[in-house]
Image (cartoon, rainbow, N blue to C red; front, side, top):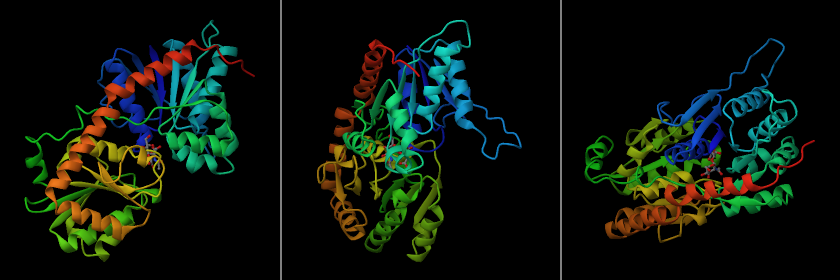
Amino acid sequence: MKIGITCYPTYGGSGVVATELGIELAARGHDVHFITYSQPFRLTGREARIHFHEVAVSNYPLFEHPPYDLALATRMAEVADFYELDLLHVHYAIPHSVSAVLARQMLQTQPISARSRYLPIITTLHGTDITLVGLDPSYLPITRFGIEQSDGVTAISAYLRERTEAAFATRTPIEVIRNFVNCDVYLRDPEKVPALRAQYAAADERLLVHLSNFRPVKRVQDAVEVFARVARELPARMMLIGDGPDRSLAEHLARHYKVQDRIHFLGKQDNVSELLPVADLMLMPSEMESFGLAALEAMACSVPTIGTRVGGVPELIEDGVNGCLFAVGDVDGMAKAALDLLQDADRLQAMAGNGRRTAQEQFCTSRVIPLYERYYEKVLRRKPRSIG
Ligand code: GMT
């Protein structure tokens, strides 16, 4: 198939999922065309069967806000026409699904080349497009429009499907296809771990990790508080991977708890699959996660997560089996669980093994990518929607 993919190419779970999906689809013989404003950060630009088309937005003094959505729609239509795409798969409803609807309509009514054609659109909902942005009253009607006009809609968890159906009162069928991880890339290689781990912690120190975009929804302050409590009892260090608005809050708290010298603020990293396996425990104290990709990536690397019982997280983490779940803000509970686990090597190892198994058996690319392929085929078999 010839598949167009649009996503937010910079840091963020939806961009990671879209990029990894493109890489996996290309490896399975599909031609993948990324149509984005910059090259997705997990791409090298040298992958076979992957093409990148930059969306350039012209700015004129008249435009206080350059019309990115229109530039995107135009580029989508051009690429679909020139490369004869079979479908367009957009990640994150706003504005991508709406730009895609425009591109589809352009191709059908005012084709760029002589042929009029129908370009099926699939929208994948990732979470904040529904739970935060989509519920801003000014965005709600257009988000509902984008969902209802799509030829196919997927959500990354059953939770997100239900939330979308309730919030948007939509009867558009939504297919649940959960986040995935490449278990051959995300794994703990006992030969590689010791040398890399030594850069972040001494042999007698425990190493925790938090990975996010440091937005308020991630509650990075809770990760620092939990770590400070752990570090009071045990020799420990923490890697904070990522960057975003709450990084200075995290730095402030680290100083407040006098653990600033024990925390590695690593910023944005593109070698997450190498960093995660050196940790003993992941902290994901989010206020909301529609799925929790960071926890899945850690689990695949045999690193259990202490997280919050929110959104789609319980579809991934079974409390006490492959991780631990707490109420949002329960810093005491999370710190106690972290200390208990870090002092019980057998339990920690059992949980790590269970997590790795969960990743392999339920969320590995080899299981999830075929679900996308089958869904594409199902959408392509359907009759085109009438437009107007
Ligand atoms: O978590 C974020 O703030 C980024 C966001 C995104 O859309 O880029 O992540 C969402 O999509 C991820 C990939 O599908 C999910 O694993 C995250 O749980 C989800 N985040 C939230 O729901 C807050």
